[in-house]
Image (cartoon, rainbow, N blue to C red):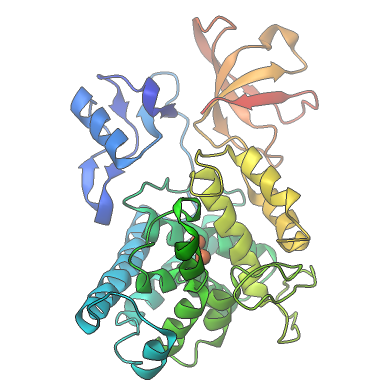
Length: 393
Ligand SMILES: [Fe+2]
Ligand SMILES: [Fe+2]
């Protein structure tokens, strides 16, 4: 299969990966033929690309760090928590606005009623990541306006666990990191006006409210289970900056690696939060929920993160993250700008699989410089230092 931009999708194409709408309702299953109605629906849902089955690309099969079942279990758990808490908040308040004091006083009301479901989701995620052997972040679920609030949380949890594994965390630490990551934005549930909206769309008042979400989220975690210390600090500190310019407390970091046994002074940013901070910014940038209104390519998003390392993000985390991000995701369309066999310069190809060096993947060439189809053939660029590719979508 290959990834096709939504504007290039045509009726008659065969869907390669199933498409879901909000709350994980199936819109169209993999293997079905597309018609104009479905293409319109995908666009309405906010998908910018879909996977298509096509002759010549049967061997292209993007690997995922977690199974579809695990993703479904995790997304349901987060969505369930959000919905149940939202209902509780609506029942308790007429204005839908809640103060910190209310959260502190009414611990039972403002707590997650489905902590078992969330623990199960976390166990699934950690097990899948450990077993999957995926070392590069290849495909992660695309966000749409309807799925953002829970899908972003699951993406962040998966990427965080991959990073935690790289830093040698124990299984227990990975579960704590994963739960903290899943709940990092849960505080937004107390702010229905801004829930699901990107920060760039908010007015000044709304931004002040937005900046409270780490505190509200941490209180929800504490109300749910007071023994969740690591998760509490992960949620509370995920918008703090290394140089102290973050919020809510303006804590500083020391840019040290967040290793398995590394303990930090308590006045510094909690190390799990430093991981979540990088990962959640990346997920927002590649999905168009960051500072810019359009999605960035993985390479551009990574470049943005690296440019903010040391000041905003822990530089060790950024470095580790740059080693697990796939710049040319499997299934995506690329153009060869330069390579050791100049006759292929300008050709178009689909990324077949990743090499250890993610800048030099294995590709299937399928069109010449004019875009005319050629018989598809495979080229492995692992040992080509001249290779330069352009991601086309
Ligand atoms: Fe956040
Ligand atoms: Fe977030």
